[in-house]
Image 1: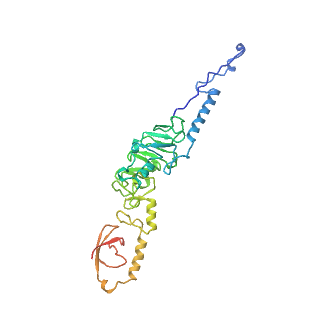
Image 2: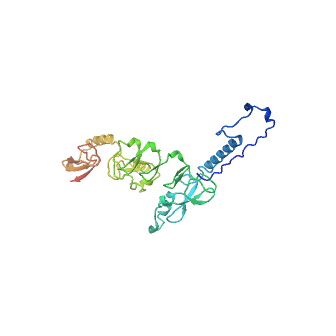
Image 3: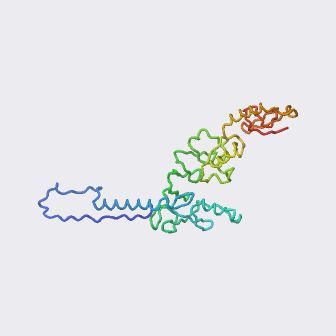
Length: 309
């Protein structure tokens, strides 16, 4: 917390006349923990002032990544940015000379600037000058401020950064090296350092992205929005391993009917090929060649590729 002035009330002076006419029952002695009327009023005023500082400018400042009431000074280039994502986007722009492109060492940030009064200071939750709360969520390790606590932020010491979604709703997988929903604890396929790479579609580093991420059936990870774009373009296989992302059994059945209704011309009727299935990873030999597709003899998938003529 920042510096908060606490008002101490002066001792209450009672002018008593004719004490010889009063009994013990006529005198009220306050208990040691019972506040005097002025004390109670002052404490109430202090609480109101603190609440005002907590709410002043709330959700009125920040950037597209975070709503917060401070800016950061980047230790790498000594420039001021709204947040570390803003820095990385600006300093990795294609207009920047490649040799000058860089990411901010976010854990090394030492100075922040209050958005309300402009005071530059060491990293802390409350401004040392105006006392305003610069972020309702504050992580001293990550130097992260965020007023939007509906994200249920928490710091994962194993990841080394802050995550969203609530600590009780997530778990850290040591093999994958990242946090997943608790719903995936006993069912997700483990892939070594699954999120420590770029999204296969947009090439943004997944480990520190602010976008929603999906874990595919094969264990690879991708932005949710990027997967939706793939679906719009009728792409239903993992961009990394080509394994089917969705249940394609109904599609395979339609291909069965199409192949049955489309006999091959005489020169191709006796042509056999060997195929490798992307879904089950097994080889099938002596498969009838067809222009429409080649069916895996093990799992009935058409997500295959030819390995020989």
